[in-house]
Image (cartoon, rainbow, N blue to C red):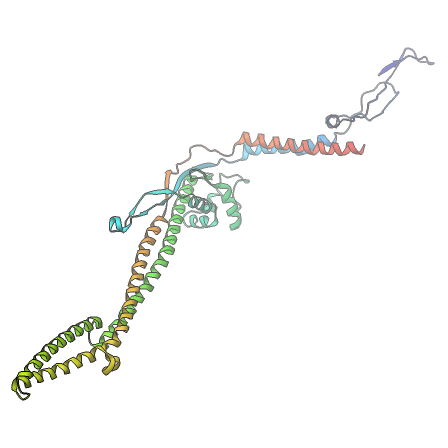
Length: 422
């Protein structure tokens, strides 16, 4: 702005002229900063008119966008959290998932099989329980005793936080996962369950229902594991028992056909009897030979000895026939012994397999006990005293800060594009 003195007709005194000029802003930050001003001076605008008030300009696009993107939403968010957002009460419970641990004592040491041990942490089962808490199955189980839709649509709940009146099962599951959280601490395997509700009693009831449902699913998992482990062992025992019964039936049939219990013992008895008969015959034959030298063949003593020798020969022949198949064919002990011994081997093998299957069943029983998982609650649910959510000041501040950052990124990007066009 400057003063220029001139003399014109009819004009007294110096006349003031205004020179209005501005350099075109070239810097990016300068452009954004200038754009936020309420007025804007056109570049290279020079006027020689008398001094007059500056002309009022329209707000810039940057200012309008700042108001629409940052100021108005921040006011709305602050008003919602400060005036409308309903209180949410949180009930918490913590528990550890444990499994039984057992050691089998060998029969050589204790002459019996027993279970000793205690409990150990089951981290995999802890993740299983946590996943169940956030699943639809848990919702279905809790819905048997509690009306979840009514709990999440209490009159205290604001329009934004409450569950929709016509929410589908999928929407209910999504809402459930926002209100219920299950966290597993990796080092310790401790499960922390937090439940939010719009009333203190509802939060406590939901936490207790979640805990009860978790204990139920833990028992079901343990039961299925025990059944799966025991079923295979029990089936093997049943098959082994059938083999033993079949082998005993074959032995009984053979004994009924032979007419005695143990063909082997019968053969040994017949052998001993034959051995005695042969010894008697040898003795009588010796006596007969010696007596025949001193007596005539018609002597009564020699005739008696001769009759006794004939009886022994007949009896010896009968006993030999019992032992061999020469005269009686398949009914002889020589034919029965291989069949009997084969059946005895089968029976002994079946009994041995049965004993092994029985031992395996006992070990399976111990493993089944070890598969049992327990929920050890050390922080039971307690009624909340104060509402933890929403965090009104923190939420409003964070959302406003995020809006400012987003607007700043967009504004700088737009200014950069405009600067490149110039």
